[in-house]
Image (cartoon, rainbow, N blue to C red; front, side, top):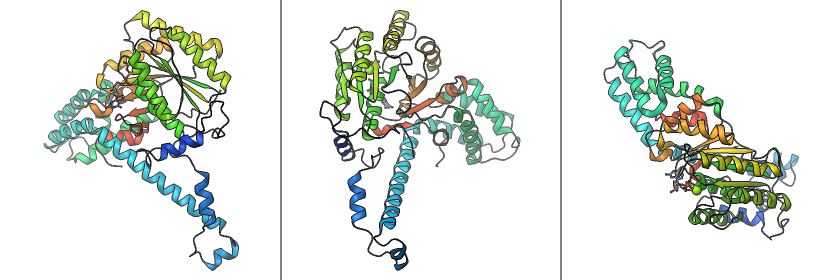
Length: 393
Ligand SMILES: Nc1nc2c(ncn2[C@@H]2O[C@H](COP(=O)(O)OP(=O)(O)OP(=O)(O)O)[C@@H](O)[C@H]2O)c(=O)[nH]1
Ligand SMILES: [Mg+2]
């Protein structure tokens, strides 16, 4: 079970604005994400199931379980496990589809190289070049090439064998960066700040996370810290409405740090669970904008010295190697605690995630493979590595 939200669901009607987390759950599961987004457990399902136990249960069960409670509970658990398996299968399929351009490039390249059959020096050099041009960077490319040559040099190899070897080495690079966020852990309200360059996918990622967290019963506040553009505020407002989240904004041109302060202070007073703060996109080489980010962090810390609890840098995979300088600068200015990589579906540069994982000791929380809420997936090293080289589960 993938955990983003482990805390007990907020009691329905406990908040002063009349929003009920029970209502949120119901509306979410009836939407197009039903069957794919994690669905909150609905008490009424269990009650109904318990009232109508399976009539074909054996006499033996009847003896030890006279009113069928155990049998019904087992059935509910099995159904839940089946639903979860279906959801996970969907996740893998979407990731494979999303990474098709990246995996297609690697598969096509390997196919052409291994046509020559023997894994000789020339073939290894070509594979190394292929990995570099797939945006994995020279260090990772050299490491992967060395690893696949071990025990296979000058032997006949199949494309699948090489893909398997690549995937397993990529997993060993990615595994230490795998960390699912449990947003319910730690202080409440938990404050998460989203940063990144223009158009990297910050607002969309916040929207997707809010949608999923709301579906899990969290009480989410969205803060429109991108005060530069009216359209940015509206974009976030739409996501807030979709998730039935509390929305805090100020007129265009307002001070972003003051908005962040207001959002945190309001969430503290109202006892909210989590505040997701959007920020304006800023190029890493614009120092005045990077200073503004530091000011936002200072403003939040006046209210909670341990906040922001997450500073999530949203990276756009399509920029390829430029992602490195973004990590460098944002890490220095805003104290980045974790990464999200978006738009992996729109590029053949998916390998850049491996290069980033190898270079920086930062957890990768999510990957984005499309624009729908269910296209934001918790990062899983093995699933990602296999999908990247075009292998099935
Ligand atoms: N294909 C695809 N598109 C995405 C993904 N994530 C975001 N987008 C799209 O990328 C565009 C930019 O996303 P935003 O969320 O507005 O980016 P932003 O970082 O908030 O942009 P600024 O606020 O201008 O800095 C939008 O059209 C999104 O729908 C993804 O994983 N895949
Ligand atoms: Mg935005």
